[in-house]
Image (cartoon, rainbow, N blue to C red; front, side, top):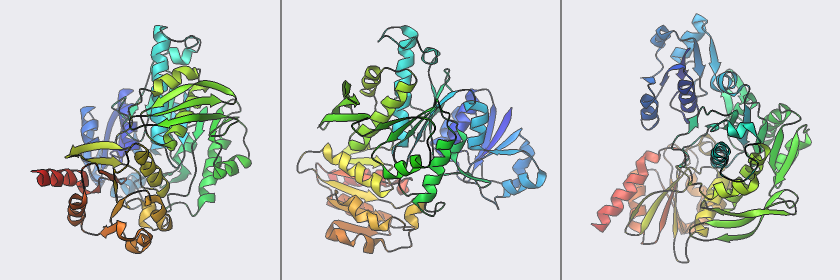
Length: 475
């Protein structure tokens, strides 16, 4: 079988490409910008890439064209496909038909934490599979043939440090997927996760986002309930019990098993200790204490992610004690509080945060790891479609309040960011010129500072600009 993927360099479509190639499919693809690291990863797999969407690619004549949601009407290649009447399918639909069908899918949905929670869950299942095959650990694993069949498959919207890859086919019936609520394709406006048919689903949280495609929070809640309505009675929903939006989703009807986390009656934590190296907390299910978890990842949001992953893994036979142990070895995700360099005691950190809630929790999590006197210099690029539309501007000052200094790059933003950040007073600096912004940050930085760069894009290579500037200052 030969598929040609339009929009292949996105994290999701690139993951589909890798899984398809691993399963024996011939894969080619194209994108508007073919550049590292995704281009290098795909070419290393033997996948031919074409830059651009020229209509002459029609001569490739694959068995199917797989369409990413970056493609819209007016795209030259898409128009040629439609004119010629050739078969095409969305990425989520192709994945459902050729990879997920017949497997036990564990889907992780929510506005925040999908990548981290998916990575935690995949690592727990991977550790349990190793134990089941070797019969060297706690009792009970070999009794579940899904765990003994081999390593799980996964498709994650980031690169977990434990695996070094974002996707793999796997050998067991278990498959972990980051379940995005963004729309599927220009011809299918349902959320991606509706295609996956999970037997286990985590609903981590739910806030307004994606203002380019959703009118309001109620519209997103409707999509989440579409997911709930597709799940079997024997399937399990693992749901954040503190989220009113998720309570409204479930209030529309729930026909599957339900377990809550974050509330005393379900999976919850106690006796939290936060140190510069790790979070430690007791894990409970109802009134039963299951063990003490040590987590290198910082913040209350990551403790929630861990509870959800433990609960989901229990549904496929992983003993909570083993899940807790496995979480102690979770090394994090690239672009989630990832240290990019340390120059003269000034540490440059990269993070994917771009929604106000994620910005706040990222700053809070980092703050919990610092000692008194250490400063956070928060550097923000409002790059997402929601941010560019200004839909979240009222929440920005509060989300950044935990930082000592705030620097915001406003290239490509039309609304008045300086006015929105005015409640922060002289702590905030807004620049339209990226080199000028980087120079100001370098000039302000002091030993012990953490420069926290937050964007869902490359941010013009600002991380390297900052490191180079700091080195030049030291020299």
